[in-house]
Image (cartoon, rainbow, N blue to C red; front, top):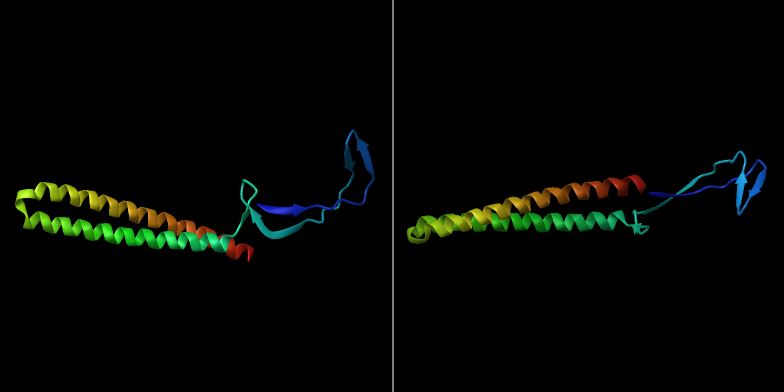
Length: 123
């Protein structure tokens, strides 16, 4: 949301209660490069882009770690047939965590692109 400052001039003015009504306004809108979110707080898109980039990298590392854990549990299932069922369950849990972390990385990648688009549009 951009801040617009309007200046009215030209035509006559008429007082109606506490409001001043202008006739035929001249629109001299000035847009600032400062943007605000829905709550009225200023948004720094460069900082937001950096934040999402960091979260994306953390999610990628989480996906790799969970994938490695799943492979390790799969290996344990083959090496330890007595507890193979337990290792297969742990493998599935780790694989699910890896998929979730990958999805989060994908989400953050798109959030980063959105912040970058706003940053370059305004900058």
